[in-house]
Length: 350
Image (cartoon, rainbow, N blue to C red):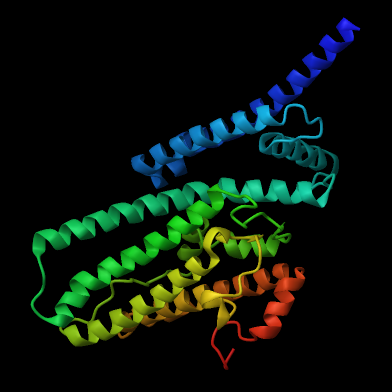
C-alpha cells in the first residue's frame, strides 16, 4: 500500500514538473531566439531586449505558481506542453505526408491554444520593440521641446511641437495596448481567446504588414509614406496636411482604445461594438491607410510611382479586413454586429 502511494505521488510530481519544464523551455527558448538570432539582434534594441528578459522572468514565475496550484489536476496542461506536443504532431505529419500540413488536434480548443501561442511568439517581440521605441521617441520629443522652447506662430508651434508630440503619443498608446493584449489573457480582463484565424490567406495578409515580411513586400511595392511630410516653403499647407494626418492617426489610436485588453491580430477575443467601432467595422485600417495616402501628396509631382506602391498596400489592408471578417463571421455576435454597422470603412459609402 505504501509503495503504491509513493508511486502515485512520484508520478504526480513527475507530471507537474514536466509541465513546468516545458513552459520554461518555451519561455527561455523564445528569449534565446530573440537574443541570438541575427535578424532579431538587428531589429530589437538593448532596452527592448531587457524588457523581454523581464517578461520572460515574469512568465516563469507565473508558470511556477500555476503549475504548483494545479499539480493535483491530472488533466492539467501547460502552454509549453501544448506547444511542443503540437510541434511533434506537425513534424510527424510532415514526415508521413511529405507536406507542410496542420495536423489534426485532439480538440478545437487545443488547436486554438497552439495557434494563439504562435501569434504571441511572433508579435510580442515586435510590439515590445515598437512600444519601447515609441517611449524613447516620446522622451526625445519632450526633451527637444524643453530645450528649443515654443515657436512664435501658431502654425510653426503646431508643425514643430504639437504635431510630433501628438503623433508619437498616439503610436505609443496603440503599441502599448497591443503589447498588453498579447502579454495578458484572462477572463477577468474579458479577453480570453475564442478562436484564431484558421486560414493561410488570413495569416499571410496579416503577417505581411509586420517585420520582417513587410520589408520583403516593400522591395516590390516601395512605401514612400512619411508621417512627417511637409510642403517646401509653405507652413500653412504643411499645417493643413499634418492636422489631417494627426487627426486620422488619432482615430487609429481611438480604435485601439476601443478594443482595450482585446487588442491583438488574428484572433477573436470578443466582439467590440463601441467606441470607434460604432461607425465602421474597420476604423483603424481606413484611418491609417488614408493618412498614408495624404503623406504622399507633397512628393507626387516628383515621384508619381509612389501611387502604385501605395495601391498595393491599400489592397493588402483591404484583404486584411475581408479575411478578418470571414473569420469573425463564425461568431454569431459579429454577424449581429455587421447587421447593425453595415459599413466597413466609410459610413454611407463602403
